[in-house]
Length: 392
Image (cartoon, rainbow, N blue to C red):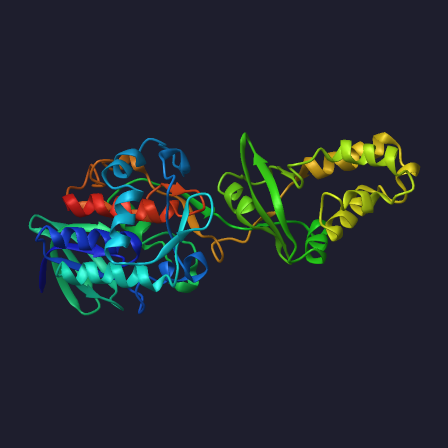
């Protein structure tokens, strides 16, 4: 039997951070992962350059049934603390936009940094190692592995969520919570492209590859960033952001030209150049292909002079307030995160320990805390992992 002080299950962002911090305290740490490759979600993030945090990280950028839960962890270890760690390892990085920090070279830099931190802290890292059973006894947690048995005093669950199963995502962390009668909130994909019925989908296919700045709103929340038409529907940062808020059967509002009043532009265009084609006029403020598709969809074609102001306003309203009802999302296959998870009411916000199960901790994506797009979810991994590493 292997004896250790702490076992961390999941060698992703949160698990690596937690293990290194606990090891620095002199704790004997066993870090396990069922995958063969270390930190795969880190590796593929940010187009391979890892958007590792956001300069503007604040509690308001996180979704949870308890929006206050994340505050303590973010106070204990914030974005500037992680940036200091990145600087200590001399990893070159830059701000892309909106406070998003990326590696200049490769996301592998972040994986190597975390691995070095674990090595220096004496962490025993074992990849391709599977857990088949967990039993809590008076002398600690007894864990059955495919390579034997282990006994630890503290157990940290950093297994992530359901997003991107092709790199090994599973619901194992939720199963452990349920085994110990810890409430788990319903999960759904977050930061994920939206899909539509055949009618709109055909137009999306025609426009596939076209991108523009758009404002996408739902139920009082709005994001103005890039929008991308794909052969499967709509994607891009503004769509991914709103997907975390969107609920089935509800419509979203898309403003395809937030800098212009499209109705006023069309009516003024009619006064200036009445013989101009409607689509040509609209192409002044939209990509040409998109302008033509919207005119066709609204049934407002031909010369400006031949269309009433009412028709032009109808088209303008579609540009600035296009009401779209998604059929659903692309699901966990392409979702960047999983919404829902371990109920924060069951955990200490100061330590991440389960209130009813001393010695059991949950960190990272498995917990019902989900950040906006742009480095926030990694910061939650660093913050929650750091906190558990101080107490486990």
